[in-house]
Image (cartoon, rainbow, N blue to C red; front, side, top):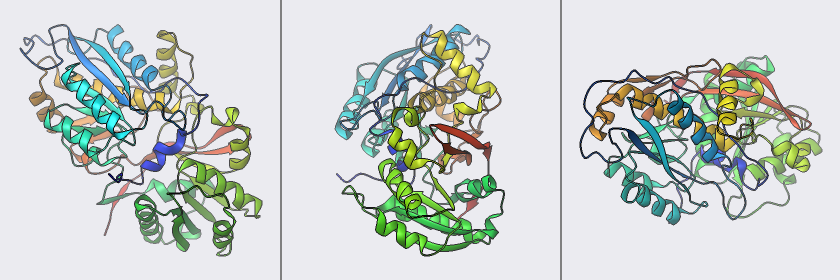
Length: 423
């Protein structure tokens, strides 16, 4: 089966090959006062005293860790909720953490185990191999799932909830994709010349189409728009791509490729003398710059658009996350996988809190898809969510960081932009 690829899949590639990283991330949610309604009888994963949850994620792969620290991030948030009394008078129990090892068949098998063996009420699911066969199975069995919404199952599915919405919307364009870098440079989009270099796959072509739409809508100029970097083979010489882009004299180059190509292309652009701004969406991987000096050297000076509040911002939300990690005996270091898991768990806990004591798949679906608003409890967390709206559009929030040496330096704080209807 050919994988369904998307603009958001670029983000999933960010941690590929990094085997030296570990830990977590997130915000927290206050639990609701215990309701007096009796616990429902015979509901999968729900008893008088607990709610059963599972994790299915790409924690490792043959090429290296994909989302390291995912289990720690999930457990940190779940245990924080339990220390506060649980949700709706019940403790949360993480029954199993399944690593699909970046394999679609293993992902589906893990999803089956979560439903049939563990009887999980809900699943935290993030993997590039969380394909429709897996998400459809959860929906058919009325199992809510929460995770990073870069795959089709997180869009237009009443049982799938991205912690920052549907990232592959066909109806809206996330303004932060091009305006974030302009704001970081202190210039309006209308004053800049943009170049887009993407991979030759569906996500590359779709992404460039969206960037082109956004820049032109803001009055900016697009001088280069190509999605021709091979995605089925590994490129070893990025010179032809770099020379073609530089020849158009852009102010900003948006590199929309997988992690390895972003490193190679960025390093080559600098080696060829490009002095303008280079930005990608995949290179914020906490720990990578210290662990891999060659990566730090190639990315030095480049900008990264991060959909997750970076730990370097040291906001109240980040401090809360690191405290939760320490509380479960883990280092106070927030990895990419840990961040994704923590925020996913935080959104789910808010949802369970909203449903309350009378928790069934039917009450969950009707309550959350009836009208649900999410806002992190601490300042400096992820952006707000509104369901059902975010089944079909992203939460358009991002931070801009710049790589300097072996550090990610915040340039633009995590902030929310606007989704623009695509005409």
